[in-house]
Image (cartoon, rainbow, N blue to C red; front, side, top):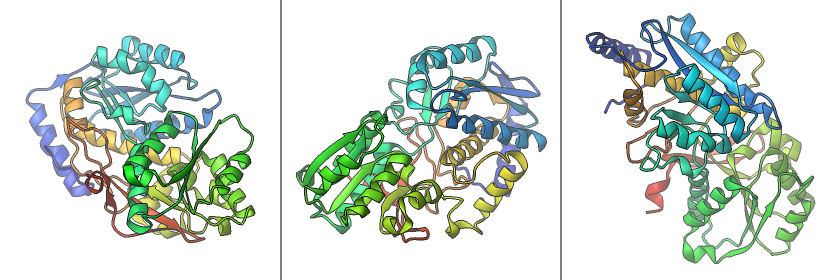
Length: 407
C-alpha cells in the first residue's frame, strides 16, 4: 500500500517512480491511449436540482487546469460529463452511453444517491469502476456486494455519529428532540445519531419529527418539538429549512443546544438568513474547510482554491459546498491516475481507489484525511465537531475517531 502525501516533492517522486515502472509494460483499459485518459460522469445540469450542475463544470475546469500543465503521466484527461436531470432513468441512459459508446475507463464523481443507485448494478455487472461517488448514503460502503463502487463524501451516518459522540461527552443527560427530512438521507442521519447515543440514552429522545421537502415551512414541527421540553435538538435539514428552523427557535425564545447536518452550516446561505445571533452556539460535524469562513482567509489551501476559481471557473461560487466536494474529488482522482502509472486498467484503478492511505487532500480540516481499504471504502474515519461563535466555526478539540469512539 502506498502512503500518499500532498507535497509537491512527494507527488513528483511518486509519479516518476510509478511512471518509470509502468513504462516497461504499459497496460491500457478502455478509454486510454498513449496520449489520453477518457472518463465519464453524470450530474443534474437540468431539472429541479440543476444547481448540482456546478459539480460537473468545476470538474471539467479542474481537468483543463491539469491538462494545461501537461496532464497526468504525459496523458491529457478527457472528462465527458452528461446531464442526468437527477432522474434514475436518465442516469441509466447516459451511463450506458458513456460505457458502451464513449468507452470511458471509469465513471468518476457522479452526483446523487438515486442516480448512482440506478446505475450501480449495471456498472458493477460490467466491472466498470464507479468511484468517488458524491453521496453520503451508507449504502456506498458495501464492497462485498458492490466491489466496483466507492464514495467520496463523509457518510451521513458518520456525521451523526460524530455529533452524538460529542454530545455524550459533554451532555449525557440531554433531553432530546429530533427533526429530519423524510427521505433516505434523513433516515441515515437519525440512525447514525441513535447509534452514537447508545440504547440507553436513546430513551431520552422525547420526540422525533420529519418534514417533506415540498412543505413551505417547518414552523409547526418546531413548535411541536419545543412543547416537549427538550433542551437539545438534532436536526437534519437542507439549507432552506435549516435557516427556517434556527430562526423559528429564536422567535419562540427556545434555547436548546442545536446540532445540525453539515449542509446547514454555510454562513452565507444559512446562518445569515437565519440571523447570525440566532445561530450562536449551533454545533455540527466537519471534514472540509469553508472557504468563505473568515477563519481560513489566509490558509494556503483556501488561497489556492480561490485562485483556481478565479482563473479556471470564475462562475463558481466560493461558498457552494458542491464546488468544494467537486474540487476535492477531482484532486483525489488525479492522484489515483498518477498512482496507476502506465497500468491504466479498470482493475488497477480499483486497486488504487481501495488502498488510499491517509491522503491529505486540499480543503480538508487539519487531522482529517482520506483512507480506504478493500474491506471498507468509506473515505473518512475522523470528523471535527465545531461551534458557531457568531462569526466563524470554531473546532472543539481534535477530530473525533468516530468508529473507535463507538466501539
